[in-house]
Length: 199
Ligand code: GTP
Ligand code: MG
Image (cartoon, rainbow, N blue to C red; front, side, top):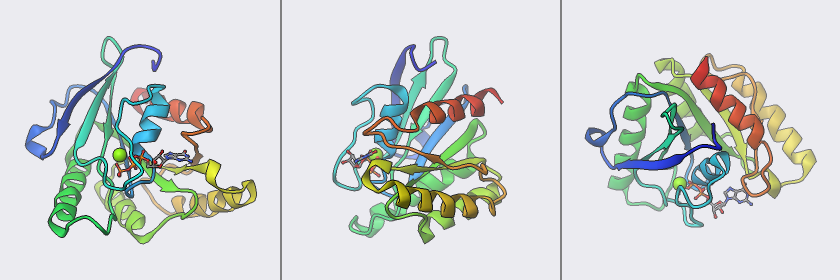
């Protein structure tokens, strides 16, 4: 699937600009700078498809990418949350955009909730998880930047994160460990995305 055509469809700075709900969607969510855009690029094997940056707050709209010809899947790169340095109004705007999208999107099959391996789950992540539980939107936790910590630390954060995932009704019980930089966990992530659109 990811070997075929993949193309940027559109950017939605507000909900009224969303594309039609004509194909299953999988969204990338998580704190600012956690590696959402990078992981979308690694998943699709297309560097530079989604814009990445060292500076948190890079992605400011919902960005839609069409996968397959014929079209079978749409990936959604979202703004991050928990970015303290952005102006308050902007933060509020992103939060509404992301939350309203996640709660109200019938074609949304799965949300990938990205968590930096170095930091583990934070309260802002738990708030998102609780919101998704309540809305019965199925999601999966994905640890990112696994190349940045030692194997023993990674095993530890993976164990803790999995334990917590299992307490959440809408969360997948297994947590995927990834590194966009090293390509780690990308085959598992592809399988998880495929499973969520075909199931
Ligand atoms: P926002 O759009 O600002 O919310 O950020 P984002 O979550 O989309 O993060 P992005 O993909 O832009 O990556 C943020 C920074 O982390 C960039 O400098 C990336 O190069 C770096 N990065 C992302 N993934 C990895 C990874 O697996 N390993 C390492 N070492 N760095 C990574
Ligand atoms: Mg981004």
